[in-house]
Amino acid sequence: IGGKIFAFGSYRLGVNTRGADVDAVLVSTRFIERHEFFDKFFDRLREHPRCGAAHAVSDAFVPVIKMTFMGIWPLYPDNIDLRENTETLLRNLDERCVRSINGCRVTDEILHQVPNPENFRVALKVIRIWAKNRGIYSNAMGFLGGVSWAILLARIAQLYPNAAPNVLIIRFFHVLTRWSWPKPVELCELSPPNLHFPEWDPRTNIKDQFHLMPIITPVYPRQNSTYNVSISTKQVILAELERGRNLTNEIMFKQKSWEDLLEPVNFFDAYRHYVIVIASSDTAELHLDFQGLVESQLRKLVLSFEHNGAIDRAHVNTESYGRANESEPEHVTKWFIGIEFKKAPEPGKKLNVDLTFDITNFIRQINGMANSLQLRLDVLYSKKRGLSHYLPPSEHWKINRSKPACVYGAGNCNQGGAASALAAAAGGAAGASGSSASAPDPAISPMGSAMLMSGSDVPVGSKRPHSPNCFASSSQELQPKRLTAAGGGGAEVAASPGQTRAVAAYQMSA
Image (cartoon, rainbow, N blue to C red; front, side, top):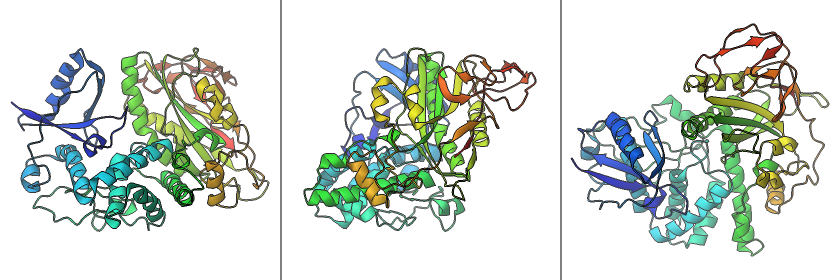
């Protein structure tokens, strides 16, 4: 029984950078079933002496094995033309196999559609670095992944076929800041074969009509590569594109440099309020799976926040962080969500914000997927000035104790429009020149509670030692009963009037 390995993604495009993943698909005979690949093959892979951390996700939208491998496997020559004979190639495959093989087919078609592949590659390397530095490179988090950025730039290359790489980059920002979303970005017209795979079509699929930034893959069956984009992530992406347009205008007149365009964003100086999701595990092996699970569900928490009437924007940082100090668990990962609250309806009035439902629902979702007492999940609130309790010391310099620079045009920071805010961010300003008075900081109020998993019992009404902005709730007396904590699998948790294992209040006044 033979097989072939085909690379795709940035590696196949020729724009991979140091430290980037190498995406590959294994093509073999149909007699090998998927469960054998994720069971027997995965077990043998983990036993290989040069294979490091390995993680299988067999039930994902596109089933995948993620691993680190000490060395490079030789890729066999691609003697199968994946672009031609679509009907013959896909006829006997199921939907998941089609999604897997389409990773290669999409990559090849993108290169086929651009007039000058070499100029395209040079420009795409810059766009990828820019997107990663600005925190908008992550399909899982609701931003754009590598394929989406490649399709966008390929469309610009089609519009400007003779453009040099620097011109492609400049036109990239100018065209996309004026794009009439949700008008889809497409590279070519397709003639569907006589197959019946579901594909993106807002005329027949109601769900497709609600996609905010459709970027369509150029092979059958067509798919929207940005179906994860939400209202908040779209706002952040558009703000970054606008910043890019402003800076490239200045670069053309030599008022700014390309380094200014690629300057990393300071996420921790962009908002006044943050929600922190903390996942910890007893072992490294457990944590690898649990970290991936929580990260894959963060987008749902952001969507839940967006439906909260008091929240204007929920922006998740694409970068995660480990231990802040040695008192924390060894295996811990933290994600930060910047929150922008809506203004109170009347001046001087406070806006009551209750995140209890959003957080408890998120934890229940994790409960249904994780089942181990060795896994713990905390969801905490912190003001900007308290972030140093959760970040490693090497990141403390990012926390500016003055008012945020409103990098994303926050409504609570009136700086005379997005242009001035973006200019201030590009210049490294963290102040609020010309800004109006800010709304009062939110205060934790013990009016609602969410069940979380914690490492030790916390007296009601007290703060957790490592969580300065997470208060235990004394608003209700809980009788001893069986509770399902994150990863607890129905563990017996004593919840008495005087003490509870994991209750935290999230009702705030903003």
